[in-house]
Image 1 (tube, rainbow, N blue to C red):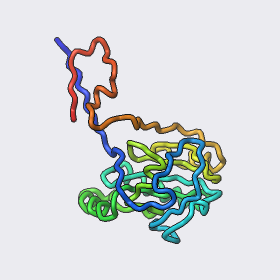
Image 2: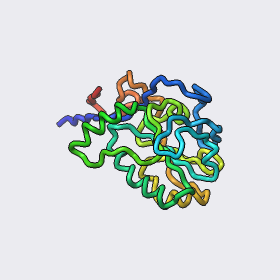
Image 3: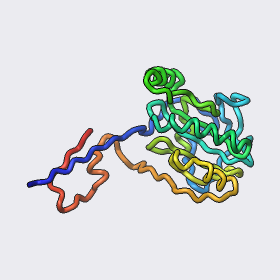
Image 4: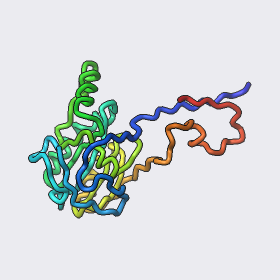
Length: 213
């Protein structure tokens, strides 16, 4: 009997960039591990004591930038845990949630899914929506995406949301970043079949395959 191997791929949360007037600078150079954040002015931030703040205001704190979008259940499920961690560590850390969608789009998504799932509620943490600046600064493909920055503004880690826990935060506060790194394949071309990019050289025993687009 011939065996047929079928590859099913669910590609969710691909990077989407929207146009927006972004201050200082409009097209920032992407940052990597070990790079230092500039003292950028963060504008239109909600759930914070002011609606704009320079990044230097977070000096001495571990900053965790949480990238999410409305149709990502795992992103939404993490909000209560992040809020509890913010309360526990107080001024030692600062969560900032970032979404590329408009507030209207987010509200529509939450209204749609909130009818059947009580997990859908907006985060109570400092929040930025309709973003392009941070998405350009920290390009990624898969959500949720967490960026860890130490008290001196140095980028220390990129992780999954599951790695944002009490143990890892305590280690980060003590400047001991030992978590696994999240690595996104940014070279993937969405206009080309996924199979050929994931398996550029096929195993010799592969006789049949299917590509789901």
